[in-house]
Length: 166
Ligand SMILES: [Zn+2]
View 1 (cartoon, rainbow, N blue to C red):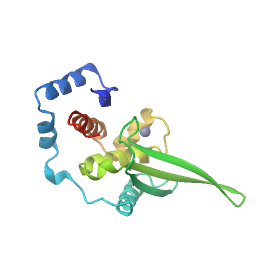
View 2: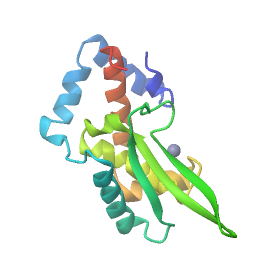
View 3: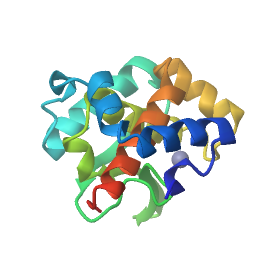
């Protein structure tokens, strides 16, 4: 049931289980993310601009991103929050690397802070491929409450699953 929380300790899982048992997880999420927490980033163009702005701010020296898009078939976490692809293409006699980022279309309907967190995650992968300490430091540099937001996103997914949305 708590498959989205696999990486967390027993204390967190127990707290979440308690919220679920008391039918309070939805209330908790609503309180934390009131209806005006949403965002207007609904198209691939808007998502591309949003991602570029964050990159300009924090990751200017990393290679360019060629494409950013919402993927309607992609589940948010199966254990990836989004996906970055480093596509290599031969152009003439040069090997060109292209960075592409895709995120689940479900994020269109979730709070802006959570969309941002996934974009931050994928941007950090431009520099660090692994989920190591340097990677998470980079995430926190771009979004100081990164870890809390990742947990919150997992709670949203848990809540959706309990309520039958896949
Ligand atoms: Zn990752």
